[in-house]
Length: 597
Image 1 (cartoon, rainbow, N blue to C red):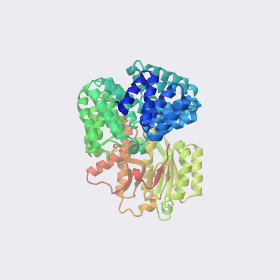
Image 2: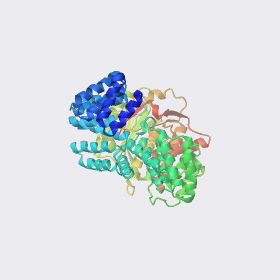
Image 3: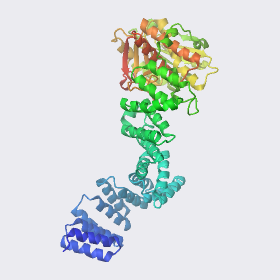
Image 4: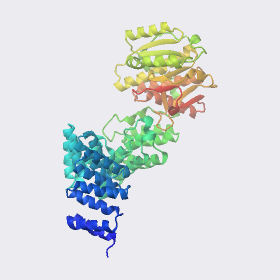
């Protein structure tokens, strides 16, 4: 005599072959013999639903649920039966119960989408179908239904593309998955792309294009390309970054994919710039970069990877020599403006700094300084506090000046303020004079006329970020009180002048990014304070010469305002006479909130 399990197995076979009468009789016999077997009730209910007997089918499925309330499949079948009545509200509720019990079941999401579609809830149906597609990228029916939703929502172009892919999934899996993966990467849906590329790679693991595509999908799914710097440590999936690096390396070195090594080094650079790469992984990238450079000495990105690794080992001089050695070669990409060429403005060798000590930059002969309202250090603040310096163009002043002034008055009472504008209008100059007249002992101002003829746009903007060092040096020399250089697109959180009273024997105070992101990003010019000491003044003079030399030589890239103080400090440290410095961690900076631009 057959057991209950064997009887149900026989009935299911008959059910699947379409012999509903014989299957139904066996289900009923099992229920009569063992009424607590929930599967028998569920299977009989499913059969009745499929043969159009919805009310009886629902009653049987509910009986199954009474016997086992934790089976997601029962609720999903109940939802399908309710949809056939039709009762789309109860159908959607049942599918949601199934999802609550089994959140990774793509069938329940697709069925929920069907019920919501029937109700006319197209936005909610779209979300359900997209979730089904994420869980099973080859689920063509979900894509077809998603296309129908998008058509109803007026998004015909996207709908047509998804419909074609959904239909194509049945006869030809790989071509359709290829197209769908590329579309998902382009549309910003990396989770689906990753699943599809994994499936394609598993089917053809030796294919270099599959390796490369999976690397691109892993990179996108890691969120590294889109994470904001302030959130990178929290949002980036580092395991997927490492997986992408390994896939690019394998596709490039072992399978000869022409773009894979480019993406290998590019991903490493992005991870460095985001502060999320660790030393062992960086070392492995360097191990690929060195032999690659022997054959391709003009690859700037591979060169930069090695330079970052040397910088992290406190070997800035070696890094600068390494970059200059390889930068003599023509770019292997045929471009002359690669972002990492800003390593050309990193100097770490003593032989560079020796003549710099007496260098007179031609750059500052192109500017004419005008004091609109001279600083009064003897009345700078109630405790003889420092001067806060903001320097910018008129556009930034119009955009951020009012908020910055209000914040300074409220939260930095011990600090005087000096505003310096570059090439301002007469209207802006009059505004500065009025502000000084209202607060003659606390607010001073100056401007400069700068001849920027012959400078490119990025050189011009770089000058605007660097010009404030010259103003800081002048204020330091003329007033004899500390100067605090800050970005105007910020608000005060606390009074830096009050804190300075407790800093013993300091020359500099620097906001530092401790994530090893490079000499262009380590020292942040958004806050940098210089004391009226020989160490503070000497440091500032050398920074100005460093900036001027690079402008005079045409070696100007983004980040010169941060590379200059970093490299000068590194040089002074190497000579055994570093300035006495008060450090502040950028991620826990106490004095300023920086605004999003």
